[in-house]
Length: 108
Length: 115
Image (tube, rainbow over all chains, first blue to last red; front, side):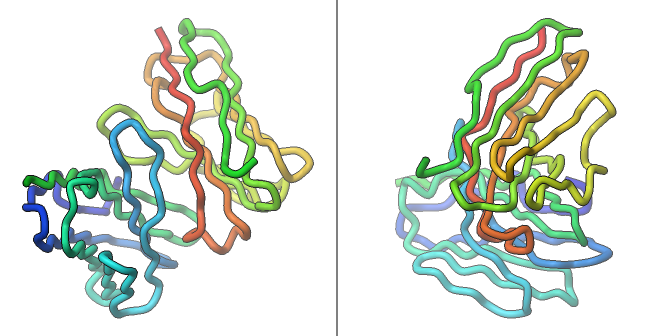
């Protein structure tokens, strides 16, 4: 997606912690979202940030800094099933734009 | 139904033919969204409906694409005179309110292949 940047691939070890970064540019920021997408499946919603700070949901946390145009998704206690693509998406006024996704591989 | 459903699940068509893709949102969801995802690419937002109206159609790739929603429920995405570059997975999502983009639930998608 245009102006939404995230790493293409990451590898981590089962049980570890991984942080997936996302930087963006918008004219009318209206929320940032993280989705998980397993190969061949539809995306599923993970988190939503509209205010600065950290949102925690179990093993997953998402952080937002609007002034820096920066977010990260933190995955703790990694499991093999966490191997998937993680999509950063930004609502820019009425438009929804997605990054190309970060393909995470969790190894034993 | 319990979730968003889409039909057909797969569609193979010849270049130049028209195709119609259908989305059944979760019952009671007033907002409906269409996206497409090309092979190896990120998601691309196409259009969203609030009830039966589409406030912003600027995401549609060309005038060959159109979408409608009737009765505040089922939506159809029509692609006229299909081109090979239209080949992609077309995803539909729904949510309770158009403002609550964070609660979107996705359907399984329609895989379109234009030969």
